[in-house]
Amino acid sequence: MKLCNAVFYICILWCTVTIAQNDSINRLEKVSLWSKITNASIVGGKEIKISDEKKQRNSSSLTDVLRYNSPVVFRDYGNGGVSTAVFRGTSATNTQVMWNGISINAVGNGQTDFNAIAAFASDEITVISGGNSVEYGSGAIGGVIRLDNKLLFNHTEKGEFYSSYGSFNTFTNYFKYAISLDKIAVKIALNHNKSDNDYIYVDDRYKDENGNDIKNINGNYHNLGGTLSLGYKFSSKNKLYFYSNFFNGERLFSAGLPNPKRGTEKFVDKNYRNLLKWEFNTNGYYHTLKAAYLEQEYNYYLYKTFSNYLYGKSKQTLTNYSINKQFSRYLKVFAELGYDYLQGENSDISQKNRKSFYQKLHLVSQPVNGLKTSLSFRNEQNSFYKLPFVYALGTDYELLPGFRIKANYSTNFRQPTNNELFWPQVGNLDLLPETSKQYDIGLAYKNKQIELVVNYFNIDLKNKILWIPVGDGNLWRPENIDDVLNNGIESFLSFQYKFNGVLFSNVLNYSYINAIDQQTTNRIPFVPKHSFNNNFSAAYKYLTLYYQQLYQSKVYTNLIQLDYYSLEALSVSNIGAEIKVLAKKNRLVKLGVKVNNVFNNVYYFTNLRPMPGRNYSVNINYKF
Image (tube, rainbow, N blue to C red; front, side, top):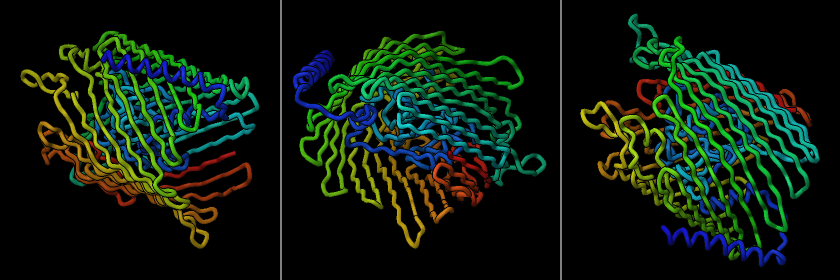
């Protein structure tokens, strides 16, 4: 490790000196730092950007946006309940979620609840597949989901209002307004969601004591969120940004089958995020300085009518500085230093303070036309335990016009969470970080009508942390117990074709995942071998019709693969229509209607918590 540290610091020093020596020779136009960072971190990788149109067609939650438009699989505890990600067959703690470059995974359990994030809170949603701990730190093993806000100084004024009403008294409302002048940019966004969520369970195997259909009682939810983005341009080379976001939500948790009326639980989320960012350019060096403060809090009520509750909260303060330089067509360099101070506590664990300091370096080279390569390093010191030195290699080569081959290799890690370390009686201070070695090999083809990406991936995960029973089985304790091997194929297909004035579009994601516990040779729970989503649309003049399909194969819900507790394969189809009733240069009004689960299929994402049957919604979208 000492040798790795020495090599790392020497590399940073060498790159800084080399850049300085070449500065007087190379003068390049400014490219946005965000683009440079992204390009440096995903050479040889795969990413999907989700459009506003896709968000509006699955507006009820971020879970549905990602479920129908990305390769990520989700485990929901009923509609509107806690929702966690399964990315490339890894656990929820192995998916890193970033808000404007800052991790928002919970301190206590290391996970993100995607039903506690508004679908419209971010301007841009990017899904990055594969390991990326070099760029994003702990937990970026299965993949990364980026939620970013963007500001432009382009003399425009835009606004948008979206409102939807549907079955179960479900409301989704969203408003965004942005104004940009020569030196000032402002963007405000508000979102509100509400639902009684009292759908009928369409699984005919279950009825109440009188033989009647069962409703999802005690499942209603409502939440309110907002985002403020401010920017000031001192000059073309000197810009200051401020981003702020809040989310307040309240959910009741149904008891599920066989008797949801027994449900008494309530859960309250409160999240606040603030980021100050300064970008400036000096003689071809692109600098970014960030300072952020985040708070997360939850209150859990076992009985919704009582005032007593359990809580968890965290406060995070971080700063980082990065420098970005391209000093020839052959080499780009990005280096970053960061400090993170995190305080976390809950009803069972007293306040724990964690400090970390990291350094990372990206080298991106284009030695010949059509070939791009990258070499990246990350070193991190943590006040709790020793973290591994990680690195990544990537390449992207254009074999023929439009046809590329991509590959990358990376080492990654996931540090133990506060719950795993400090939970009373069973917390384990001897836990080691999870580590992985993984690689991707992919082929990509793109022309004006078609884009096709096929990736083979392999994840060799060591020191997997699992909670296992101890003693008489009444207590569970986290241990580094398993090695897990995940491999499979992840594919993406998009095409557009115009025929007789009708524009046909289709976007498809398919994944084959083989996730195996190396000790038992059994499949990992809640990982479907096959998963598939498809979005097809046909647009003619002012009318658009679309069809969505989701398929997931059978999954086991425990490590011993008991069929009795498995979830059968599911297939869900949605249809919708949108019509432009006003389409002028600066104004657009669209009306929409959607039928979810059009075939009224029974499906589950977790045991005893069926999802809604056929349901309907109407919406209006006004842009000005």
